[in-house]
Length: 97
Image 1 (spheres, one colour):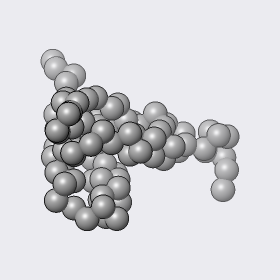
Image 2 (tube, rainbow, N blue to C red):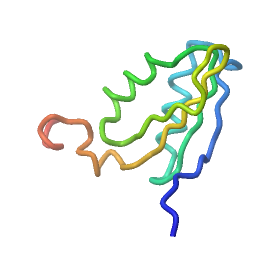
Image 3 (tube, rainbow, N blue to C red):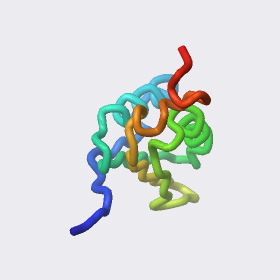
Image 4 (cartoon, helix red, strand yellow):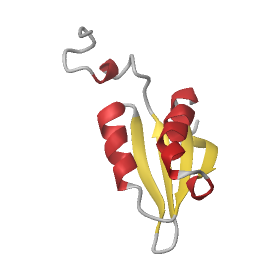
């Protein structure tokens, strides 16, 4: 039995206006089932997006570079846990709010 994550979607963010990119990516990620993945295609290293994932979705994803420049970056983002499984990113284990 294979445990490999299968990409469900590929988003070429070069075709999306910059102000819409992260919202669209997070929307697609939120719609993924655990074990599915999203591949992002970009013309620069998406470090700010990675930081946002770290802050917004800790423990829910794995970040893997498939291609790292210099002209094109492809990053696979695997969904490895749901928000509930990861404690929702809350420092008190889900008891805040």
